[in-house]
Length: 529
Image (cartoon, rainbow, N blue to C red; front, side, top):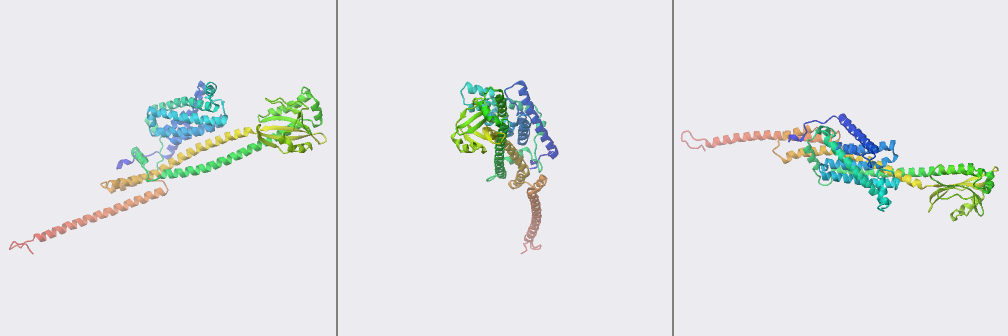
């Protein structure tokens, strides 16, 4: 009964925190060293999760998840802003490794093989899906060579080529990474490995055997751990989804507004470089005319100032259509010659009267077979202030969907990573603050109830030696339980003493009665009646 408590006391909280920080920092450094080695050696692998695997094996969920989160955050802040999009994959790999190593699944070859396959599925298939949504097909990474071979040689679709290529590369990457991590774990002395096992005891530490037994014990219906975790998860998901949706809408709206204002600014700039007094003269010029080429060069520079502008042109609006003054060439379409008449499009007819009158029209937003376009017409006036032409800019808004999708993936990935860490931390603290103290009290009480021969004094003494110090209702319950045990002990002790007295009185009474029964007459020798 006495051996349920561990002889060696737990380390101070400050020492545990220092050990945790050391493990996390070491894991992050190892991640970057592995990535640097792969890059310098020209390997078609990443090798950037070795530190995450080691932290998960040595310290469990919390250090593993922290290393998996911090590494891509640092990368996104220093090298690649999109690296944070893969944070959730690192967190999943850390969780898988921690669980499998804790349950000794990786002690056998089959377990190691299973870990490699699971991590490759997370990093390769799920990572390929993330890459597809962020970059589309043909992104330049370690798997791009195999992706192109699968696409060109095997005739797979772009999406399947991306997924299969990512999985194949990740299978090799995770094989090397896990083998290196296991080798390091086997090389490390047992004393070092135990040092990184951090327990947040709020009671006297239990032996490993008792701890395993308590963790295996089940409740009649739903355990307190599951109830608390479910509440935490539901609350976090509701808050997270709401926050992500609000952030996405604000980001999207802000980007659209910014693009619209930018397009208006380009249109005003285009209008400012064209002399309104020479509109008719420009129409009669040839494209080779030096004066014409000079203005066309300015307009071309405006178009090339950003990738999101499709067309820049100057039209003179007349009854028979739009008369080309300037029309900048694009990669696919040469610009129209000066004086060319472009007929009014059906969807444009409602604006024609205003344009003919020299008025200003609101920007036109369209979403058709040409894509999502934002068109701005800026009036060009002559020296008398009369509108003589319009500078038009057609800006593509399609990139906003792409950028918003990238932003959404980054936010979701960061949220899932932080959510996983918060959940793991909540589970960890819940176990040591609530679950284990309650189970320890129940287990200690059950030792006496199931073994009546055990001295109650020993049970009471064991209760006092638990030293549950959570500072909350659990501690209050422990104190009340201890007091009740002491009261019961005193009560039973008192009963035993009284029973002993009664037993002694009974024995004395029996002796007296026996003497009376055995009494005889001294003269006759007969019993006295």
